[in-house]
Image (cartoon, rainbow, N blue to C red; front, side, top):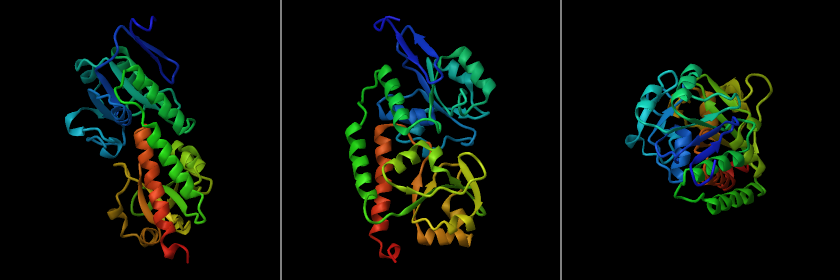
Length: 297
């Protein structure tokens, strides 16, 4: 297609989407919508995944003004007909290496693609955090996003974290999602692009034992506590149990008393600005633990 005569984008499934005009009425998976918002693109509406329940998960929303955006449902409640009726001219979804649209039922996704062009950006374990970020930047540029990526902000955050992680103190960091008062899911760092990025910057991440799922190891809180982390990156999405629910478990209380618990969002917006915020959160936690005499004992 002549670059001056229309719009085109090849997604991470290798599918070329073309249109006579640049899409302006975009519906996006909430993580994708939050990413585009950081580039200055305002979506028409958003949708969530099977994990999100009836309401959109604010933890995934980044800076999106959720109250001002239309929700098209989540999971089996996703309303593709409403997306079409709203005049959407592009749907932006994410994928996890299966070639499928994440967050909605396969049949609903198939029907959606018969009505509205769909672009999928892969965000799974086989992608680096930088490559995910770059793909969203490419998509945002194709949509003529008004804001430039916050490259300098991210570079500053990376340098700050690298310097802190290279210090004499080496706090041990455990990423997890609380299943409930009795069990936890321990993240395998090498299967999460954001955790791999932290490790590449020098953060000492704890890897759980083999066995269990590909991305998580399901354990009781006694096993989690026995790992003796100095910092816990705790999943803050709606499907993770909140901290107040866990405090009846003595092993969780032991974790909380020993470790600095900071928020971790496995589905944070994939923008330079959002990633810089994540790195700053981890750097601040490393600095706080390193300055605490109790962790040097």
